[in-house]
Length: 108
Image (cartoon, rainbow, N blue to C red):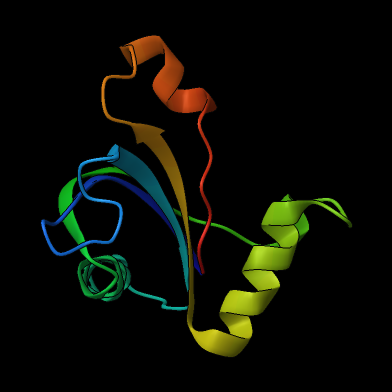
């Protein structure tokens, strides 16, 4: 299982275009090869209506990395079933750079 994070921006066809400036897309991908995990994540994010930027984080994760009840553990387990789970941590248009990490909009 890989955990990957990308910066993404809504495409003009995205329903929140003009309101949401961008998001950090955090993905759990059930792949054993880094390149395959990145390709799956990029395709999923693009299909969800986002332009995907550079890869920020990519590393192997294990279930034991997350304590019981932790949201990331639940997402990891769901990715075992679905193959991928992506959470979009969004920030609105005009948000100061330091507020971007605090905004949260999720989708899987």
